[in-house]
Image (cartoon, rainbow over all chains, first blue to last red; front, side, top):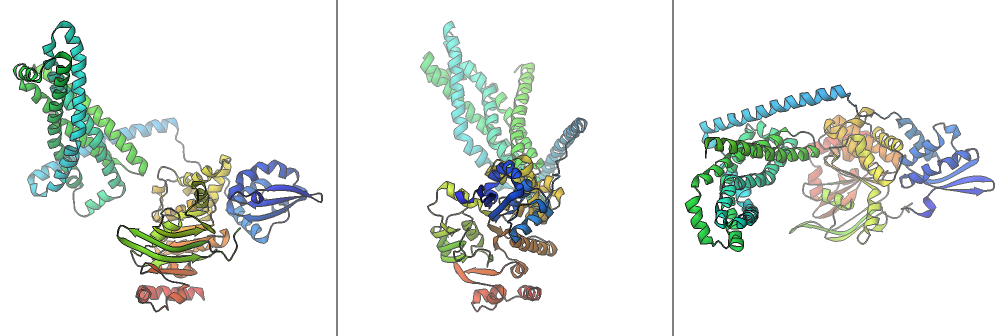
Length: 363
Length: 262
């Protein structure tokens, strides 16, 4: 494309300057760069331009001005026509996107915030209304979609959750074991691992992983559907989008998350007992014995009871962010990010509230 | 720049396959510089696929695509980029970047092409907006704020950003009201006249076929059945072509087209 003969070059022939080359998109920079030289020789400049396109014509106008009397000689008729066309369509004042004053900006943000709160309430209201109508008319429930959710967000999450909670159990046991060993209180490793894992870490790590894995998927799916008007299409077909898109996810995750939490508990304990055996020489048998004697089953239930609440948070935040998306590809990204951040944030806050509540009750 | 005898686009023995489904088999087509070629054919005859093969966005399973007299199979990545810059593609849904406004959408290819002063860049983009017949106020709008017709024009403006020699359009008038579609066709003709363009369009719009194209390639039976001007094509005896044009809409478009051409 960039041949030597096509780039603009100035040659002195018989005391007159002649300008050769293509005045096209490929050489815009070179043409603009030669501008100072051209201006000096404008009066006795001869042109020999082989090709010109609209971008090149614009560069030409920039260099030689809009007055066609002042243009150098040697343009062909077509080139002059093109230049005149570009001149006619040229628009020098480029509209700028409107910028807001700082006061208006604050106002907009506040009004956005309050409308956001309203949308949140709206969404929760619609969710409960949909749940209520479902109770009255259970046959409308999309059972197949529910199984889909349990498979995709429950079953397929098994390997990652098992692995990570195993490692987490092992790490807790390792760090705790180092301290306990110095006191010769090796056997207390069982209570340490079991209590932290069953009560807190198991439910928490599961909820965080599922928020990252499934909550983001919900937000992205619903946001894309919303932007493609698929949600509106459902509505126009007389369907409640909540029945199709949200309730199966909600109920599916309320079933799947406690099961995943149970799995996380088990594999965390396995990780802990492995480290206890390697580091503190507590055999798995001893570990299990002490577990059944010293750790009440209540701790397990305290952990597992949180899982459905976390599921509710993850699904409603993810789906709400998805349903609020409008605009283009950007919105999908923004909504997905927000869904994960808000879901994890809320999960941790609610977990803290649960901890305080349970310890106040004395469990 | 190019000799007139050489075809601008030369497709030879193209075979395209999706799994076991063969879309094109030994398809040949050559397009001369300055042509306004329409690709037509029934649904599933591989018009859009052929268009994306010409645009070098898809490689056929067999056969060669030569553009601007260059065979494209063994070109380096760099040479391919240079070649793509000489082509503009307008996608069916516009495919404008939704996070950029119209002006920024058009500036993007020019800015990546060369480092130019910002003011000059904006003027170039603005020129394209005016050339496709959009009002200046459209420049600062986001794609999702534009109507369907304006969106299509903006998509053409972006395709024209680097002043390509070849403009490929995928269903340019689909989804437009008759008035906008007709105005769009006129705009294409104007651009063709002023910018030394070769047009290749995939279309189902029979009025566009009469109004815009001077050559029509009919795709069927996995190859190009016939390439001829509309007047000749509608008289063709092949059953598939007859079937395509033997209906009331085609007859109406024919009357309008012949009337307009006289």
